[in-house]
Each structure stands twice: as structure tokens, then as C-alpha cells.
Length: 392
Ligand SMILES: [Zn+2]
Image (cartoon, rainbow, N blue to C red; front, top):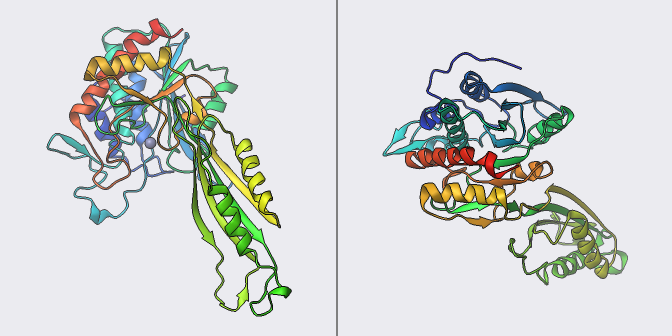
């Protein structure tokens, strides 16, 4: 447990909190002081803050934060990450990516939308809620990692394990990823597709192209295998998911000689899959088609995340109602896009994602409209006012 000095900004002001966060250069795995900003805002409100540093051999240590206000259940959790992707080419930026400057009603900086802005909005919503005397009937917690944009080994997953070991239960969670494609109120993510990458190596026997009977060329087999796995779509989609998609990302032989039959050929593919599949069923699906071609091959893989769905219900309605009340728009429920830490949280409690407008995430001149920050704060405030009546 740690305590922090009073912040030099008003925790009720989402713009001030977002600026303080953006000014911490927290490119993964660096913290850059970002979690200290949050502790300084949350501890005076009564949140008990735990700074959790995890490291594993071969990975950089990462700082995380779990902060909880209240001891009773249900425990409503906001999850997010203070780490950001690198700014990239600095000369592409019109403004210093870590200066958090405001121009024309927009706050600029790396992390403005992904996702320091949303964290600031939640902190401001919680601060206003507490200062207005809204002591929660349950608990409000924040699970903030510094390892989402990186390998995600020493982040949310390990914090969740730590919570479980402590007997700490989460009852519902909102992740503040930038889910809105164009305007605040567009979209809530209620699940995500899974992602699996597979590495195929097809073996043959090297030899002279003029003496093919003395060799075994693996490339025609590789070509037939790739044709077999791309001939038909994996499925036609499900009620909440778009069709699964297999994408070949590279085919490598690396043979510099025009007169040598190579010993092997390789290909890499990525599958984004819906709730009809798991990594195991996909591997079986692949092997069936590869075996149909025959010959010697190896298939390695790694899974970035399984698909998951929080079916429409109390949590999705809570967030949709709050967004509609503030923006006048009823968000669409969607499962599109890449993976997020929600893929770990879904094993512990229902989870949905709702944050800012994602148009400039990971780009140069990342920015959010100040008006969006203000309205997202109102939306999260609305969620906090209603959550304990609607989620048991
Ligand atoms: Zn993010």
C-alpha cells in the first residue's frame, strides 16, 4: 500500500488529469510517473492504492496499480492502461507528443485517446461522485496496467492473479479503450474476436533443379496447402461476430539460387476468429487440410487471445443507457477490432469496453476533443450513479 502527496491538479477536472498523465512519457514498459499521478488523485479520495510491480525472466519489469474505494461488494472496476505506443517519427508531429497542449478545443499528445484520456475521465467521474457525497453502496476500483501495448505479460493478467490470490472479487468491469469509430456514443465493445498466429514449415530435400528425381521440392506442397486453407471462409459469422478471417502474412523460402531446389518453405498466417472457434478447433481445422496435401510439415502457433462475448444484459445496458443519456445516441454493440486486456478480465467478471473516439490512436498528432473528455466524464459519472442499483 502506498500513499501519495496531494496532486497539483484538480482530480475533478478530466482535462487537467489527462494533461498530467500525457506529460508522463510512459512508452511501454516505462511508467514515466503516470501511476504516481493516479495515486496522487485517488488516495486523497479514500482509494486504497496498491502499486504492483511484476517481472518475469526475459521481460522488462512493469508497474501496475490497483486502487479500491470501499470494502463491500459488488466491486465495480474500471480497467485501463497508462502505457502508450512510441510517438514514432517526431517530425511527423505538429506538437511535442508529451507536452499535452490544447489547440482549437482539442488536447494533443500520445495517449490522448488510447487511453489516458479515458482514465482521466473515469478518475474525474469518481472524484466528482465522491465529493458529491456519493459514497458507493459497493466498491469502486481501478485496475491500471503499464503493459497493454507491449507483450502484456506483466500487466493485467498478473494483477488479476494477484487479486484472485487475495480473494478480491470483481463483479463488473468497464475497460476504457477507444471504442467509438467516429463520434462519442457510437459503439460499445461487448466482446472481441480471438487471434491466433500459425507458422507453417514444409519440409523437402534439397537438390539440383536439373536432377529433380534426386530431390524433393517442398514448394508445390506449400502452395497447395496454402490454397487448401484459403479456399473457403472459416464461417459466415454469428449474431454478435463478423466472419472469422484467415490472412496469410508472409511466405518465405529465402533461396538465392535459381538452380537449387530448396529444402523447405515457410508461411505465416493469422486468424481472427469468432465464438464458433477456439485455438484447438482451429489447429485441428488447419491440420485436416494440411494432411490432405500430405508430406512432412511442422505447425507452430501462438494465441494472443481467445474470442469472448459478454451477452447483452445488465452491464451492457447500463453503459449504453449512460452513453445515450449524455450523447443522445444509442451505441451499437460490437465485437470488431483488435484484442484488448478485456480478454483477460472476461475470465473474472462481465466486461465491456467504452472510451473515447479512436480515430487518431497510435497516429501522429493523436488528440481528443475536450468536449468528448467532458462528456465521457459525464457518461462514467452516470454509470457510477446507477451501477450499484443495476448490478448485484
Ligand atoms: Zn489501448
